[in-house]
Image 1 (cartoon, protein in one colour):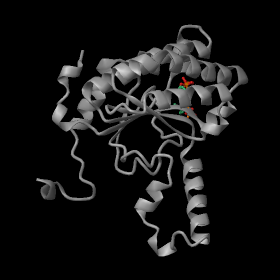
Image 2 (cartoon, rainbow, N blue to C red; image 1 turned 135 degrees about the horizontal axis):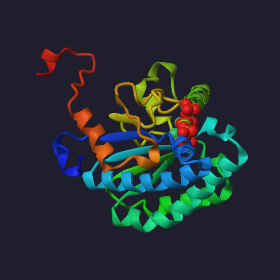
Image 3 (cartoon, helix red, strand yellow; image 1 turned 180 degrees about the vertical axis):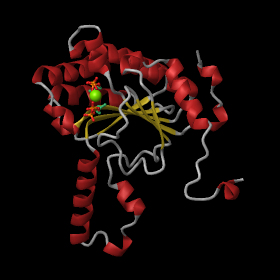
Length: 246
Ligand code: IPE
Ligand code: IPE
Ligand code: MG
């Protein structure tokens, strides 16, 4: 079993993003309702956040609810929103203890008002923390994010705030929900699915992708370290040749 001590702290990914998948199948395997899987997924979130903070990862982004997830059965959506509110309430202390600042990306206005209120409270109560930035992707869809960035930029062009020649990658970056984040270095997806599901399309251009078969509620310190070790054994060439890097 790997532990945090196995990680080379000189070669840490700066930004880790996780598609936390497999709660429903985890519950099904146990003959339980899908929501039971989500309830148990919360513990894996807590574990992962704490372990990343201990490793001094600077940015952790978790895909918690996609724009497409609104199409799930009403009971499931309601339970996920309730779990969100309950966990946020419970976790403020731990976030502060670990010097973690909370942020969100996504269409937050579409969340129930209770969840919005809870989020903005925790965000403000943790805003002075200077350790890891934990970003929750909630009602997040990458295409929607890009669409809204394009709209904002277009309206600035129309009002002569930006000229079309000056639209570069930096301008695009600053109009995305993720403007406060660096590009993703390591993207992890659990549960055996090997797809992106509308997550951070622009931001993962050069991310290292890591997939495993574990259902999210079972994702442990061992699995996190396994993913980071895989990352640390790769050569990131960014288009160059191996020789150029050495
Ligand atoms: C991930 O688990 C959690 C959310 C998408 C909110 P799923 O609920 O997608 O679980 P599976 O993929 O159906 O097993
Ligand atoms: C992606 O998982 C969204 C989250 C983990 C929040 P899904 O389970 O919704 O993705 P698909 O539908 O299987 O691609
Ligand atoms: Mg899923």
